[in-house]
Image 1 (cartoon, rainbow over the protein chains, first blue to last red):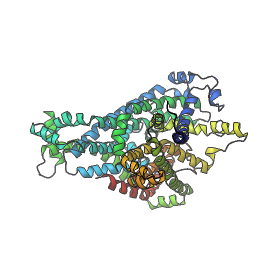
Image 2: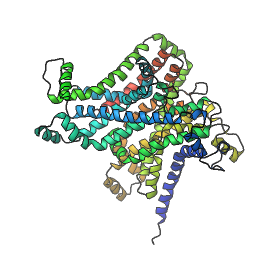
Image 3: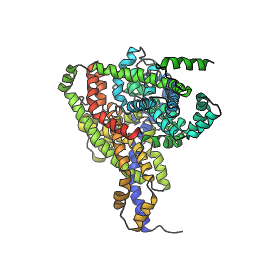
Length: 283
Length: 291
């Protein structure tokens, strides 16, 4: 067995000197959340680094909705799921069609549409929130799931269109030409050639839209206010309304709420990294 | 049959000039239509309506006289100039760390991406409670170690704003590190090997190889991050709520504050005031990306 040289040890030590603070910095808020989720109320407020009596009781309270703040937990969880899935599906349909039209069919004016979409993508969503809130009021959609779904589709599709257009520009034109030779209609090319070839990017974009909708707080809190209509993040924010908030239950609910997107992210990481970082910033 | 009918219908409806469009262009218009509808209904109309609400010069006078607005504008600038530059320098540094070929660094990078993968609301609230002066873990630790009471973190405007900036960095650092890593990995290894043979120090390697090939990416990332950070509502609103005494607002939370107070024209005016900051950045990014 070869002993590591002094130089190698030095390098390793310096790397560890960076790695350990990075690890602690990353984990503190998440560990703190987890700690609260497994602590009974007395332990949670005592500032200990590990509870004396770790318990899963908080989870049972949340799942059985046994607290005033949690009485609609499952309804709100359902709202979050329905809205996230709807936003993912609608964004995919709209963006795929638009990207196909812009990149493959060469519609007159499609460059302008692309630039308009890109412009929307760069305007911070928080600035669009105020006028969007008023508009949804005018359309009579406030407190309706559709207001949040449509708002999130509006926010998600510009980036989706842009990434999908970049990806489809890379597909060889000869494919389309060959299909046209064989007498395929644009719709057949779309269905049989374009969509199958675009699958990796479509997975990435679908995941992006689902996560965006699941994680959204600002729009959800503006557009939905009824206890049975709100999504989970808004319900979490509502915990703050009381002075004596049950923080251990808030953190438990937050932990449950954070698990699905983290799981989805890691499951689709392969697609996310390839599909999105390449598109996010082109050098 | 139904499909052909609707296609010819929209061809009639959407082609005002009697120019003959090819069938594929007709299909293209049909396929663009859903996005255009969304764009008209939820971008053009709200923005136009918002600008119309913000047309009254009196609301700008009111804004100018509102000390909270001036404070929010200053806070936003601090957030952008200090927060973003700090974040990007750290990301640049860490991107060099994470491309090291080590098993444990691979694992650490998987953990490191967590803040980006989990939703921001629960983690921000977790930090909020951690900083609670009476029951929070941080002040408990300070008390146990020193016997003194820790600072009243979120009740001091300077500390509270710093904490909000820290929260923002915590959340978005992994994303930018990942982007800068792809930039570093694109640099040819031959250059570094040649530099190694010539006995270059790590600083010389960075200065003459890494930085020249990454500076454009770095600047683009910085500007893009600035645009996005202008709209970072969660880090401030959920951590400090704009408090204490409305001293930690930024422009994105201020608009929502006015909205909640039912001062809609002020809300829109404050957003219009942010545009001189946003539009040049957006223009630059459009130039970079729409090729």
